[in-house]
Each structure stands twice: as C-alpha cells, then as structure tokens.
Length: 324
Figure 1 (cartoon, rainbow, N blue to C red):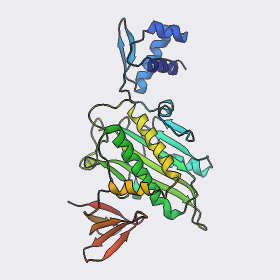
Figure 2 (figure 1 turned 30 degrees about the vertical axis):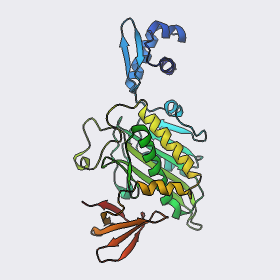
Figure 3 (figure 1 turned 90 degrees about the vertical axis):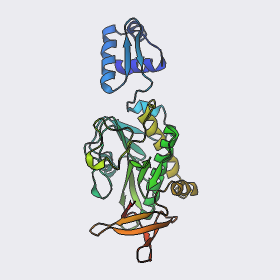
Figure 4 (figure 1 turned 180 degrees about the horizontal axis):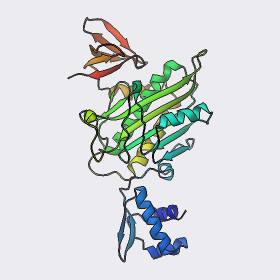
C-alpha cells in the first residue's frame, strides 16, 4: 500500500523533511497519491509536520499501535502478534480463538476495548489512544495451582518495562495490579481452561491493561482517586509499541521457567502490601481487617487477623485493599 510505503520512507528519514515530490519520485507515485497517504497516516494517529517548500516530517513522539511498529522492538521471534484499533475485549476474543485450537503462543493487542474485563467480573475502563490492552495465549502444560505464578510474572514484566521506559519505580499490589506514584496504572486478568481429570491447563490467557497516559476527559469519577497513568511528562517515542514489545519479551522469557527464583524476588521487592494493614475482600462477606506479614513462595499472602490468628490468602479466593 502507498500509505505503508510513505510511512516507511518517513521513518528512514527520521528528523528530516522530505518533499512530496521526492517521496513520489522514490515510490513512483503522484504527489496527489502522496498527499492522500499522508492524510490517511494522520487519521491513523501519526503526527506528521507539513511545511511548504520543505515537505513532510514524521514526529519522533508519534504513538501509533501497529504490528509492524511492535515487531520493530520485539526480540522474541517465536511470537506472532495481531493488532486491532478497537476490540470488545482481547481476553474474550482470544479465548474464543483458543477454544477453536489456534496455535500458541499468540498475542492480541488493541488500542481500545469496548467491553474490557477485570477480576471478579468487574469492568475495565479501556479508552482509545491512552491505553495499551493486550492478551497473550500460552499452552504451558502446567498445573492449575501454578496460575498465580503466571500472573506474578506478568506483573513483574509490566513493572520492569515501565521502569525501563519511564525511569519511575513501579510497585505491585497483590496479586495483579501495578502502581506508579501511588496510583493504579495496570490491571492483569489471567484465565485458563483446565482438564478436570488431570488438573493440567489446556491453555492460558494473560490479559494486561495499562494506562499509558491520562484520558483526554480524565477517568470516570469513581476511578479518579485510584487510577493514574504510567507515563507523564516528556513523551516517549513509539511508547505503546515499545511497551507492548518489552512486556511480551519478558513474559515469553519468564514463561520458559516459572520456578526461576529471580521472578519471585523481583515480585516481592515491589510488593506494596508487605507489613501494611489491609482489608480482606471476599464475595458476600464484610471486609476483614488484617496486617500482611509475608509473601510465601507460591505467592500466597501470610496475614495476621484482628483476633491474632495467622491466615494464608490465595488470590483465587479473595482480593485485598490497602487501608490508610
């Protein structure tokens, strides 16, 4: 397509203006075709400066999700990716594909979700252009009891990538949320199909939603006190493509050996709740105050309840909320 060829040429001449006539000459197309391609790229979200007698320049802070853009930064050659401008839910669509037998690994990535989902049936706010929404399909052949370790791997992968690209510290709120500067910037939803006889997982889907920037109209009122953006300040060139590639590369590496002690160490050192008071939230029950004592090797929380009893919390049974 002319549009893709024009984009590739502008990328090859980064930080340099290229005239419409020169683009047309190199691509053997008319200047009108070049202008139409430039307009299409702008509609896609690319920031292109146009100056009379100088030509066109692709801004270094353009942030457009595309398969080609992510592939430029992705190091793992095993991983096919599919990118959608908008999708109902990357997890929902990928689950249907997995049930139909699509080969793993496979990653679906979107710039917007119209029906995003979080843990325990909650909706996940997924606006266009200010977030990255992705799901990774694996067929790891592990036991159902090891799923929490996969979620922990995802949290570490997100935290490390945010730190690499932003220079800010990222923390983890057990078991699946990533925080920057005291606000939630990422949620993770891991879903699996399990063989009831053997307890072995048929397939596993890791869903990740990251707020890369503040929405134009801010978050909905109910989220404003808790939700934040992973990246503020100076724009990061190709941010969402680089973020997607970094997270996926780390996840693929981690999934090769879930027993790697470094994953547990990286997770625990970022854990927000250690030593802090929390409320234990279980479906159908009143919040129960407790204090977090430690994180066990299987990622269960060890807590002391108000009556002095010690209790293990598993992520599939409860969630926790930090208290002041």
